[in-house]
Length: 255
Ligand code: PEP
Image 1 (cartoon, rainbow, N blue to C red):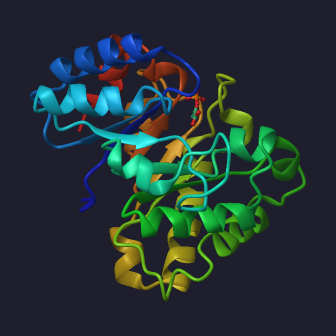
Image 2: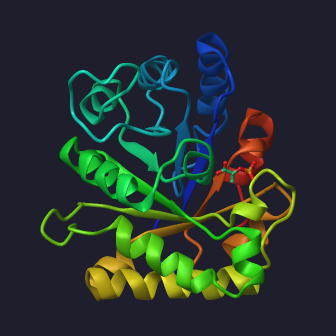
C-alpha cells in the first residue's frame, strides 16, 4: 500500500482568462469539496494565479495552486519575468519547472532548470520538476540516459540546499497533448528508475517520500490503470483538466 498521498495536478497552460479561470476553479472547488484523500493542484497562467488562489481561499477549498514557470533571479531588471517571491506572494505553494514546452519552445536547458529549482526553494515553493524523453530519444534507446541527465543536472547542489519537498513529473514528450499515453509497464519501469535516482542523489527516505507523477494524455478512462501502477503517485494533466466536469472524474479515480 502506498504511503504517499496521491497528487492530481492540472496544467492549464495558456488557456483561460482571469474570470474564466476563477469560474473553473470555483466549480472545481465545489466538485471536490468532499474529497480529502487526494491532493489537488491547479496551475493557471501567471495573470490568473492570484485570482484563483484568492477565490479558492475564500471558499476554504483545499485545492493548492502552482505557477507554470518562474525566473531564476529573485528581483531586478529582467523585463517580463516573474520571480519566486512574486509567485509565493500570489498564494501559490508549487511551481512547475522544466515542462517540455518550456524546454522545447523557450530554451530551458538543464542548467537553467537547476537555477530555477534553487530559486523556487529560496522562495519556499515546492518544485515540480518535469522530465521526459522525446520520441526520437526513446526510439534510439536513450530514455534512461536522458532521464538520468535531466535529474542529475536538475537537482545539482540540492544536497546543501535541501528542498523540504520535491515532486517529479515523468512526462514523455511524445505523449503530451497527442492522445498517446505511455504503457503502464513502461511507466512502471521509468518511475522505479526515477526513484532510484532520488535515492542516489538524496537518501532512501527522501526517495520514498517523494511523489512521482505521470503526465501525458491522461484521461478519465485511463486514470484507474495509471494509479494502479505501484510507483505512480499522481498525475499531471493538461487537456483533460480544462473542464472541471472532466477533471473531477480524474480526481475521483477508483482507489
Ligand atoms: C502537460 O501539459 O503536462 C500534459 C501532460 O498535457 P496533456 O495531458 O494534454 O497531454
